[in-house]
Image (cartoon, rainbow, N blue to C red):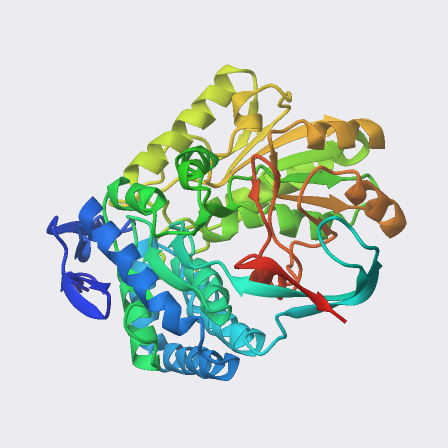
Length: 490
């Protein structure tokens, strides 16, 4: 793959592929540090024009039948499957994902999301309510009043995605938004936009009308910020850092934009002394092995009962040291690079800070692997931390696990909840009833009990600084709609 390029120089705005006003910028492979290709550099004006095009298209698209929308989404899934072999190497080159992650967690999951919301487009948008007897008032004569709640499309949705799983994440926004009758402006992360440009091209091929899906890309924050400012955008669906999410909420408040935000996480993994340690280790090690810890749901904060603390630390150390770090194109590579040099430097600074604050480095560290090119960090385990340490409180987005011992259940719950984040926590215990009761006391949007597996029909989102709103399954349709009450004399 060395030397292969995927140049994508045009934006799609109002059904027209055209050059960006700001020219192009380079997209870099995080493993080879070579230029993957060029992407369009959209300006603020480009973003405003894309939003205006989506608004114009909304009035027609929102009145299409559910069957029409379902058929287009179904075709999009078919075309994604057809283009799988072209998309996988591009995604891998842009993200630095390992062969296993790139082949199993990008195109296949995006296909399943388009298929799911092709079905979802056919779900009823009406919620009938029982009639209510109302007395005469100064406003109106009394009577039996019927009612229905209609879920109406929000309007124009700005879909702004993160860099870790670009195709998967964007499909999870665009598919339910379109299924509900919204139009969209797609804004991928600066680091890996090329595969999303191809996704939009596939949607066009699937029959999405002009203006219904638009795309802007850019190397900085200008284009995305313009979408948040645009009066034509009704909703922002954002996945990314909490700091950026706060800025979006502040800027969008001026025009009362609806927000769906999946933000940062600092997942607590509570391991009781009756836990199956093999299962716990497999789950915790996913922080290292699954896309180098670049996942918001990772169990990065291990809270372990003292009776098994030393044993767990020893086995996690051995696991971390056994994971191969290297070229993501090699089938036996488990830990690939981080997305950029800046992110690698940031994670290294956190590791050094943790050591300075008294953490015990059991595996990994800031010493870089002996690899000629790429932004690599070794799987790192820092034990004997205290809850106030920076590395315990802040999201790193890298292959770093921190560990804190605890004595009893109450202490474990208190430690888990001692975080500004609340996206995804985990509980490992042989007593499933206790694990369930502990899960209910955790201030987090999602809890895995003895597993890191997901159920994609559940509502997904976070408490506290981990976000606003829920998507997933039918909830992914609800969050892209407004509830409209319609009443009449029965």
